[in-house]
Structures are given as structure tokens and as C-alpha cells.
Length: 209
Image 1: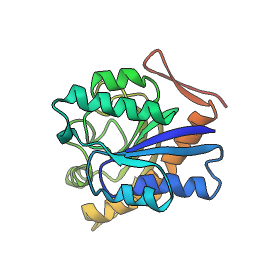
Image 2: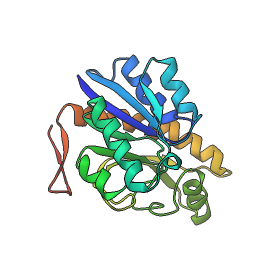
Image 3: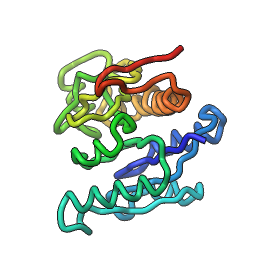
Image 4: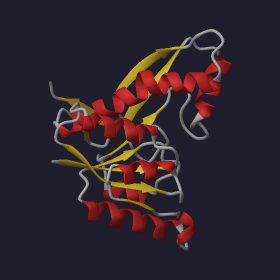
């Protein structure tokens, strides 16, 4: 069994997409062994509870500094036996120590076609507001490996979504979730679980057909 830990900050819609993919058989041999939120009361934790998935809140506010916080995170994830760490709307900037602890085994889902509308300050609705403000006709989502930069790690998979006249940030966000994020996150997890994708030399993506 390929084990994953999912890190969340809010409602957990991408977590739910992974849960659903496991449930309908499109993620065979994959198990969520831990869900961790940095926010007490995040609905993502409720989703985990409903499915009987081990979960907890590890809040930065409970620790004297970032080093202590990430030490606790590392310990919790290692204790779960997770093979892969999935950032599914996790809005905490990772420390170098955390990244080193799981080098090549952390992925993130971002609601744009990287390198567009990504990096510092681009998260949630802000991404879609920027896309609409710029007037692009196509947006989408990206799953990538995580490195020390913000949304700079090697890209695993992307999916495009058309922007329609009259779209609001909220409408566009929902379409990107439904047509891209909820599809490619399970696909990326499965590819890694099956050994078809890996991070090599800190950069390269190797795809095994």
C-alpha cells in the first residue's frame, strides 16, 4: 500500500477529491494515513473524521518558533509512515528542514498553469482575480514537486481550463477545481505511486510509460 499524508488549511475540497478517487477505485493501492491542518476547526479535518482517517491540527501558534513547529510536523508525518506528502491547499510556507526531510516526496496543487500566476501572494481567489485582470483566455491547474521556492518545483502534470466571458473569480475558481484540480491531483498521486514519475537530482521529472 502506498501511503500519503495530506496537509490542508481550509475546506479540503482537493482532499475530498483524493478520498473520492480512492473510494471509486481510480487510486488503487493508495491510502491516506494522515491529514494535518495548521488551523483548528478546518472543515478538511471534518472530512477526514467522516471517512475515519487519522487527523490532527498542528498549529504554528502552539510552538515557540518555526523550527519547533516543523519539527512537530516532521515527527507526525514520519510517524504516520507516509510515502508522499500532498499539499492540498496548505497555506504555510515550508521550512528548508521540512523540505529536506521529505525531499522529492512532497507535491503541491496550484490553481494556475505555472509559471503564470504563481509564487508569493498567489493563492486561492487571488490567482483567479489575477487571471481575469490580465485577460487571459486559458487558465488551469498544476501539480508539481515542492522545492525551496514558491511554486518553482518540477511540474508533474497540468490541465487547461477555458475562461468564459462574464466569469467572476468565484465562478472561475469552481470551474478550475471541477475540471482540473480534482482530476490531476489523483492522477499525479497515482503516477508517483506506480513509479512512473519521480524527482531526480532535485529537478528532473522522469516519466516511465
